[in-house]
Length: 84
Image 1 (cartoon, one colour):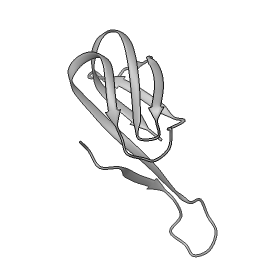
Image 2 (image 1 turned 120 degrees about the vertical axis):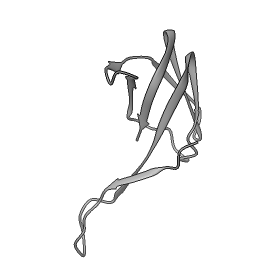
Image 3 (image 1 turned 30 degrees about the horizontal axis):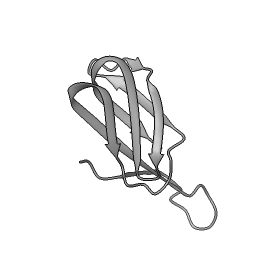
Protein backbone atom coordinates (compact mmCIF):
# COMPACT_ATOMS: atom_id res chain seq x y z
CA UNK A 1 0.00 0.00 0.00
CA UNK A 2 1.42 3.38 -1.02
CA UNK A 3 1.57 6.17 1.54
CA UNK A 4 -0.56 9.32 1.19
CA UNK A 5 1.07 12.00 -0.93
CA UNK A 6 1.19 15.70 -0.20
CA UNK A 7 1.16 18.45 -2.80
CA UNK A 8 0.19 22.03 -3.39
CA UNK A 9 0.71 24.54 -0.63
CA UNK A 10 2.92 27.60 -0.63
CA UNK A 11 6.56 28.06 0.26
CA UNK A 12 6.25 31.56 1.73
CA UNK A 13 5.04 32.68 5.10
CA UNK A 14 1.41 33.54 5.86
CA UNK A 15 -1.62 32.70 3.77
CA UNK A 16 -1.49 30.68 0.61
CA UNK A 17 -3.15 27.43 -0.28
CA UNK A 18 -3.23 24.77 2.45
CA UNK A 19 -1.44 21.51 1.63
CA UNK A 20 -3.54 19.03 -0.35
CA UNK A 21 -3.82 15.52 0.97
CA UNK A 22 -4.30 12.68 -1.49
CA UNK A 23 -3.53 9.06 -2.22
CA UNK A 24 -2.26 7.14 -5.23
CA UNK A 25 -3.32 3.51 -5.72
CA UNK A 26 -1.59 1.11 -8.11
CA UNK A 27 -3.72 -1.84 -9.25
CA UNK A 28 -1.24 -4.39 -10.62
CA UNK A 29 -3.69 -7.29 -11.06
CA UNK A 30 -6.57 -6.60 -13.48
CA UNK A 31 -9.91 -6.50 -11.62
CA UNK A 32 -13.46 -5.28 -12.24
CA UNK A 33 -13.62 -3.97 -8.66
CA UNK A 34 -10.79 -1.99 -7.14
CA UNK A 35 -11.01 -1.79 -3.35
CA UNK A 36 -8.81 1.10 -2.21
CA UNK A 37 -8.07 1.39 1.52
CA UNK A 38 -6.69 4.95 1.43
CA UNK A 39 -7.10 5.87 5.10
CA UNK A 40 -7.61 9.57 4.30
CA UNK A 41 -10.43 10.09 6.78
CA UNK A 42 -12.69 11.68 4.13
CA UNK A 43 -14.47 10.64 0.94
CA UNK A 44 -12.25 11.92 -1.90
CA UNK A 45 -14.13 14.19 -4.31
CA UNK A 46 -11.49 13.79 -7.00
CA UNK A 47 -10.84 10.30 -8.37
CA UNK A 48 -8.88 10.00 -11.62
CA UNK A 49 -8.09 6.59 -13.12
CA UNK A 50 -5.60 5.77 -15.86
CA UNK A 51 -4.90 2.37 -17.39
CA UNK A 52 -1.42 0.86 -17.73
CA UNK A 53 -0.92 2.77 -21.00
CA UNK A 54 -1.70 6.10 -19.26
CA UNK A 55 -5.10 6.56 -20.92
CA UNK A 56 -7.92 7.97 -18.76
CA UNK A 57 -10.60 5.44 -17.79
CA UNK A 58 -14.06 5.94 -16.31
CA UNK A 59 -15.54 3.73 -13.64
CA UNK A 60 -18.31 3.92 -11.05
CA UNK A 61 -16.87 5.33 -7.82
CA UNK A 62 -18.42 4.63 -4.41
CA UNK A 63 -17.20 5.42 -0.91
CA UNK A 64 -18.49 2.87 1.62
CA UNK A 65 -16.79 4.90 4.38
CA UNK A 66 -14.26 7.71 4.92
CA UNK A 67 -11.32 5.29 4.70
CA UNK A 68 -12.24 3.22 1.63
CA UNK A 69 -13.08 3.87 -2.03
CA UNK A 70 -14.43 1.30 -4.52
CA UNK A 71 -14.14 1.71 -8.29
CA UNK A 72 -16.26 -0.59 -10.50
CA UNK A 73 -15.37 -1.24 -14.17
CA UNK A 74 -17.15 -3.14 -16.97
CA UNK A 75 -14.04 -5.25 -17.65
CA UNK A 76 -11.02 -6.24 -15.55
CA UNK A 77 -8.50 -3.40 -15.58
CA UNK A 78 -5.11 -2.58 -14.09
CA UNK A 79 -3.64 0.89 -13.72
CA UNK A 80 -3.50 3.81 -11.30
CA UNK A 81 -6.08 5.80 -9.34
CA UNK A 82 -5.29 9.24 -7.92
CA UNK A 83 -7.59 10.29 -5.06
CA UNK A 84 -7.87 13.79 -3.64
